[in-house]
Image (tube, rainbow, N blue to C red; front, side):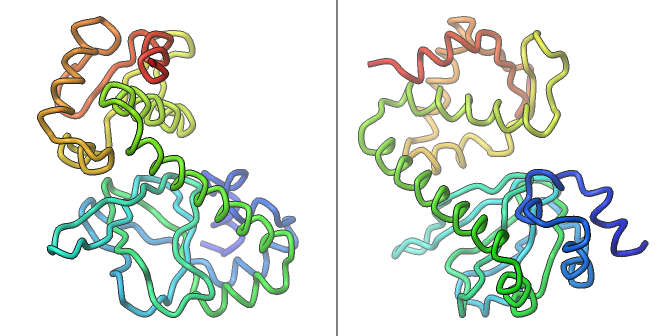
Length: 236
């Protein structure tokens, strides 16, 4: 397959970092990009290792993990399709990045990608904007962990997951209830939200009993009443 075709059939072409480039300018990136699929549970980057790659996430969900002083893993962020993966201008990786689902990436050597950034100011500016937005999300999450109730955390998390599922085309019908698979286990949700597994399960059951969500089985979840779920996320 020609490198041009790799960009032509890219599922996140209009949302990814390289969306700031014209078709002609994509030529510089075409020569660098390589598609790579990784299986669920496979690690792409280990914290502390030399930072040698950057990538656009084409499909799937990745987790960013930090090790706590007592040796446990803490999920500090999630990456979704069109998100940028890796750290240009960094000597080593700060976080371990592992696939929560089967994923596909468009991978670039970091040093060569940095040279492309320096030649394309718009893309460099967009990367800065995305980095600042990610920092804002992280600050909001810290505030959420400190101040929100368990119900608000769970409802807000499910709304965010539904929004991501909609963005990647997983909605069955435009107006009906939305069913999708959560990429995280109950334990991982608890980890992300600073809750116990028991609290996560209890809150999910309460939402189910209230008719706000349905749990068809496995990791599947149906948002039956989005307005009610929004109300739960904003409850005082």
